[in-house]
Length: 296
Image (cartoon, rainbow, N blue to C red; front, side, top):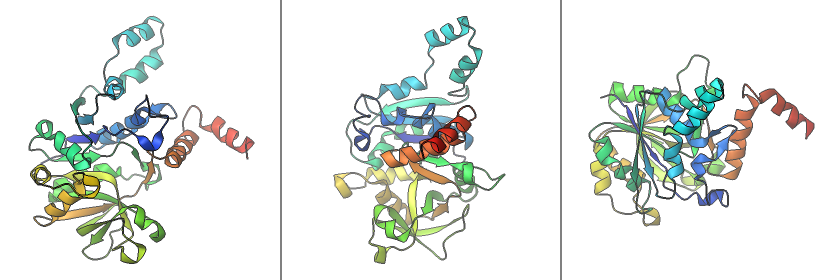
């Protein structure tokens, strides 16, 4: 089965980004001229996704509104002859892609958030994309497809769940979920079978230097496993616990990414993303580079 749906868990309160996220969803904070979540949705669309399922919170309607039609604004831009801005506004979401929103009433973990989307996703395979992680394909080899697109293609060929991983320094492994592998680590852009995931291991106990980075392609079977998963770390339903159960039934592959990630849920990760995207922005990149040089 092909993967045409993606779940984006956006119900979190964004406490790492306070006070900015007090009134504005962290996913709506902009990197240059687009909110973070727009980059994530664009990544999904580039991988062939046609349905975006937002698992949302009642206080974060701004995310839904961003992907809705704003008739009054479009009419005003059209009347003023601002055709370029109108084109930008209408390109936020292609006509053949739809956004659906469901609610996560209580913050019971990532696994619970995914389970909240079950009725919408049904029996289809799907992607899970953490919306505060930007995956930047700028650094990939020329002509290569984006990482999520490769994961989707791999799933179509093997029907194996795909978990995106990236290499991290060994002295940082205690900050991540680190995968154990069946054999040698895969090359960038390749997958290999996982045998487990160790959450935040000590450096001496880490089974590899490949960490999970917030992109998953999963079969619908994971919903049944999530429904019976008991609360784990933080008294929350953990997606990794359900993936561990899935591994006991069928192969699950670790896909080693080619691109680069930015954790836009953290202040320094957000600043790194802003720097990278601003420097190559077609309208402000050159001027921004001059600004940086002037302040050295």
